[in-house]
Image (cartoon, rainbow, N blue to C red):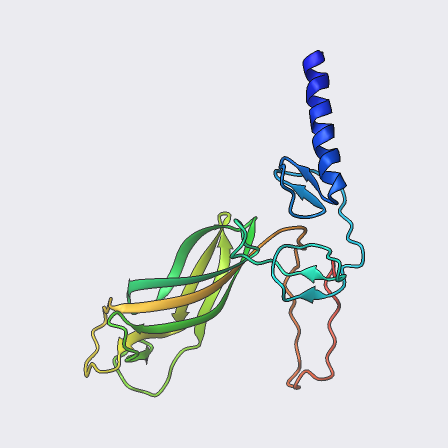
Length: 222
């Protein structure tokens, strides 16, 4: 019992001494802010007084004396909210990429493909498309099919062209089985931090118009 009282008094005196300098530290004897917690926290609610608009000063989400909400800086933290990934896959066949498992947890992250490129393994961009895989230059090509999708709890990537095969532009008679292509994928993985809304697909028939007079219902959760 005496040991518990001694520990409590020590913690109280430490907080009191820090409080006299205008800063309180929990789990640290050298607090850097008004309240500096070195460790995990558990709370039901978090309120910010006049957070204002985000600033470009870096740091974490904090209500500052300037009434602003500082942006999260992934270079200063151990777990980024916005993760930028470049995925380079070599030795791709002419069929392109059909189903590549990134192993990124679909329950914790949202993965979006925001850019991509098709090239040869040697780095050149001498890549063309053979529509219908018929070996004929018919000036036709399929639509790009580059997307991320969820499967078995992780994010998968598809990168190909519909009804078309990748061929080397410099080849007079491109072989049907070509396995010397590189696909660069630029991904954003957004960490699910607070809440998420499961939004169903939206389908709208514009009836041949340009869409300027069409209205769709607002998805639930917004």
